[in-house]
Image (cartoon, rainbow, N blue to C red; front, side, top):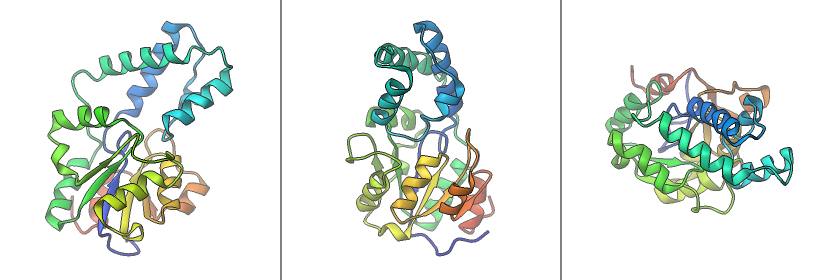
Length: 221
């Protein structure tokens, strides 16, 4: 597998791409819904993946009704997620090797996520990753979340690299849509949701893990 051009920068999604977190989000929201006493299913959770929180909140209220106990669910969901991940977040396969390779290649990199900056730093800090990214774009840094292109465009702006020269790494459909709309080369590393025909058409490649990205960038990792 080859890239259409050598990237001048790499932009990472966070949940499900850099960290193996989506399975914990899925488990914790089902547990939280059971505790709060409201409806929730795995299929509904999958529709939340890769979208801005405001979009997801509107979706849940539209889907379940205006009396859905959203605030209670979100608070309880967060508590269960933190309990499940109290020992730290596992990196996805190939993440550490890819960051090392980008150091060797001298390629700048950023994170573009819908998470808050406090959550981002809480995730990066314990693994010593906070200084491994040249820019971090999170909730509040852009007008519209994924699947709009804004998060990736803001990341490219902060890196000082033209979007067309950026390689975006994503695990979700909405993330791929966002990167593609920003005019970037996009690679999908599926986590909970496989690539569809639509998503494959928006991607440069769909790969198994970040080790494959290393190989595409010229590293044997």
